[in-house]
Length: 381
Ligand SMILES: Cc1cc2nc3c(=O)[nH]c(=O)nc-3n(C[C@H](O)[C@H](O)[C@H](O)COP(=O)(O)O)c2cc1C
Image 1: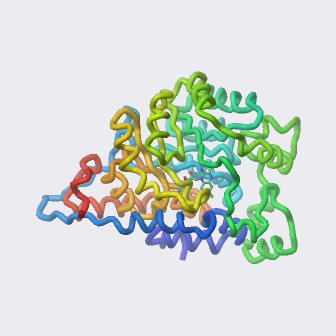
Image 2: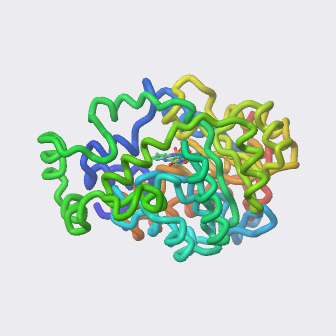
Image 3: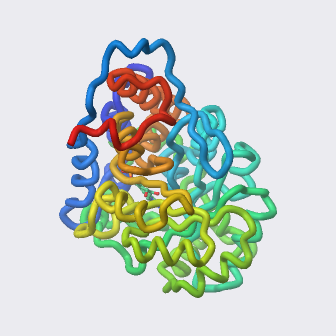
């Protein structure tokens, strides 16, 4: 099977698993603790049922969705995913290009191997930047200034990493950055020659994009990764969010909130939107799924800010479920990243095509010609 034969996102996942060393595949695929949150996020979508409606003269299907006063071609964009350049050389730029071609937002992770400036060059009108504040506040301010200088539309502050997650697959695999070469890792690489060849051809570990500027002159990729790691998991407060609001003039979005009071506070600080997220089940194994927290969050802020969601989306129908429960927009992490890890840009584009096709089929079965018409009435209660 290659990516053009992939029928669903699970097929792209299988292709990614075949190509990647296990240590990397597990890092993408895994979740925290018992992976309960990871499973339940997907199961929550799968359990949502819609009321079929027929004889509705379905002749077309319009997937256009408005967000922040602008029209995107699809109701979903790409959530920030770190280290994609480790799975496929230039992986983040493939994601940026796929987002540009599909006219949807692409959130460049703070932990990307591509720099802010490189992503902005590929997708100037579609790139947003996700921030993990650094321990050194000067670095944080500079990252925000660079996103502004690159004219990015939105800054996404991720807040759901107050502590390092207990991801047991990674602990067992001894996954670290910089990657440590052990006999086991070398064997893992040898068993996945397509990935290893690309890794070697590109000189091994890529630099962690935007962070290279702060790790000292001519710092190696390993030093940059060490520096980035030393700066992460910085304590964050509402006062910090206020400071970012004062510095950043574009759209400001908080990602990872799940309590209605936190949504209200974000609104009071002047944020433009929230992404309700459990980090794809990668941080906290005992929290609610994003779909469970969505109605309460929507009720808390009404239409005063954009309410977006991510976590567990693997099907077009999952997105329809999120929209029907009150989300304005959906983000996808692993689904498209599996495609990139399997085959770069063609894999990402295949992921988009699969999800678009499923969106159209789902809407057709419930008698809708426009995704903009999805609302709570389509839900089977
Ligand atoms: C491999 C991986 C790396 C991630 N890195 C980041 C990151 O750097 N910043 C961030 O805000 N979220 C990160 N996330 C979380 C995603 O933005 C998103 O919340 C999550 O993937 C959504 O769940 P899904 O993968 O089931 O779609 C990462 C997720 C994965 C799978």
